Image (cartoon, rainbow, N blue to C red; front, side):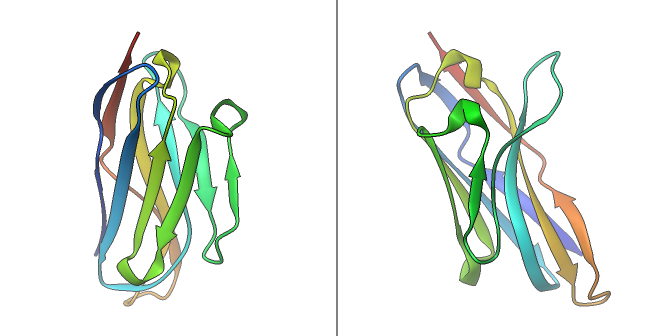
Length: 121
C-alpha cells in the first residue's frame, strides 16, 4: 500500500512564503513523475507544478517565477516552495505521484489528502 502525506500548509499574508512537503511511503518499487495541484472553492482542480524523476519541471503560468518544485528521490519526497504569495493562490493543495508498488510493479496515480493554503490580503 502506498500513501502520500502532505504538510506545510497554513495561513500567510500576501507577499509571504510557504513550503509544502509531500512524502510517499509504503511498499514502493519506483516513483516517476510527482506534482502539485490545487483546487479553489468553486473551481476545478488545476496543475500547479510537476517534476519528472530526472528533475525536469513545468509550471502553471500563474505561478512561474514565484513557485519552485523540487524532489528528494532518496526520501521519496516532493516539495513546493511558494514565494510572493497572492490571495488568488488560496486553495487546497494536493500532491500526486505516479508510483509503482512492489506488489504490482505497475504505475498508478496516488493522491495526498490535501493541505489548505490561505493567503490573506
